[in-house]
Length: 298
Image 1 (tube, rainbow, N blue to C red):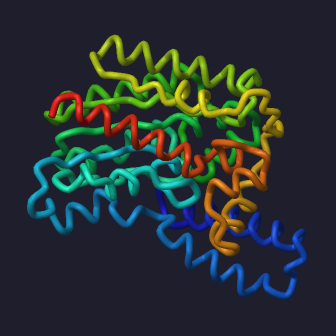
Image 2 (cartoon, helix red, strand yellow; image 1 turned 30 degrees about the horizontal axis):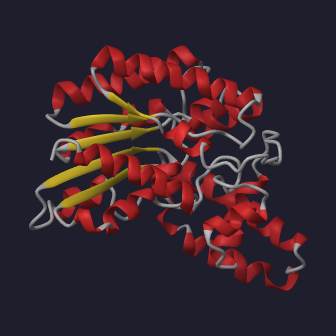
Image 3 (cartoon, one colour; image 1 turned 90 degrees about the vertical axis):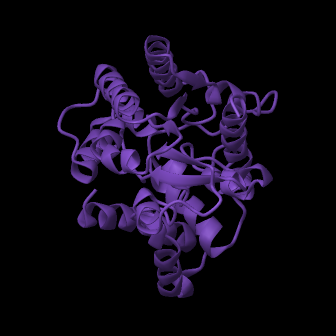
């Protein structure tokens, strides 16, 4: 992803944050708040524990295994709770080094384009969690146009194209590394599991299960685990395809120092902060799935 695309994405978040604070009556603090948000999302371009950082310093002394977590913003962990950080901080990770290969806004095609860096880490295990943006790119012409500008996708996104790119990622990792591989299926978009958008999520997850069956790669059931956390009788706000709630979530977390779980509650949700990204409760589920999978063959 080029510098201008990252700047455009960051400006979108900042704009949403400023509007959210204006609504809350914090007019006098807008300029100061914007500066705070800019500093807080400085790791927007790449995680601090990215493949590039790992390749610069090398494997940590005492680390018997390197695990690369590849994906989009849910893995990147700046506008979503950071499940890679949870994994790195767990007591069982003393001998495991986790590398964060998530980048905000990426589709599966983008992950494929930067796979050389993942392979260069010579990982012992790789997890893949990508596809939320692939689904969003099919929701409306506005979303598609945004991804064409910011992510430089070369074609109109479709389920078939997503399947092709994920299969290419798995094929390269199997051919060019000795790593164990796992795919996490996609979390819901919005918490109304019967929505049209979550119908698309089910189709994309079915495609992931097909890839897993064809390649022998385990598909971890993230969607089901998260759905099980939704309270009985939960009536979430509908996902209408907008982006503004993302800015509100970042402002509440970064400026008002609200924990991600509280941001969810502020927005009437239980596992998602802004219809797209995970709160701490949901990120812990991702970490638990990955940790359990890693422990299977230790």
